[in-house]
Image (cartoon, rainbow, N blue to C red):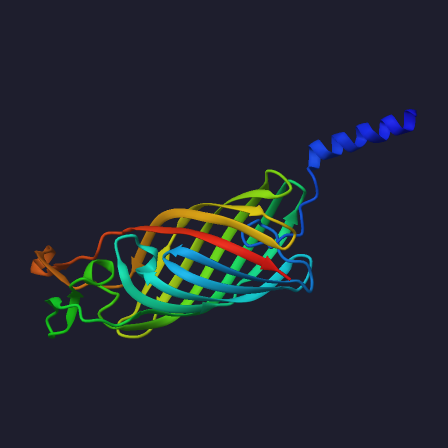
Length: 258
């Protein structure tokens, strides 16, 4: 009798300290990876893209996959809908720390992206050589986006901390930096720095649903923007660039594990 009571007390203390063991779920945004040999498909729809992904469990701490994105929001910036693009990444997810209450996940997802497929934006400003340096109604206030075909390297780095509220509900605050480096029709880089959280609920051992909201600056990195018309020191025409817009990820997702 005494041993039974002590065992019950120990189990209760362990439950409070470490929480219940996390379910082996369809881990889209729970901070966990899939178990070895498990597979998962998942769509995510919202801003700035419609994405479809597949992940495969490699070990207890690593899974890998592929993710295709149909993009309609230029570099995550909320000001520029309608600039169409497409990208493919290879998500490598690593969970070095996992307890019943908390999971820490690091994600690196290299890939390639068409930042835009080109468009018909009229020219707003030319440089001294007659080259257009700003376009109407295109991404980043006319500097880059829908005016020409843009293609380059896509490297998404992310950190998520999955806090398991219950066995089925997880909230995952984190940081995501989907960096893009363009190689065609002008060299530039885009560095969105998006902070926020995802929420995931496990419908069953095989199905999960949830949503993500992350906000932050979407920074355009480029050496020279072109003349703005002002005169700087020594009579040189001053150059300027676009302001940094607000970037956002806002989507809903569904995961199915098999």
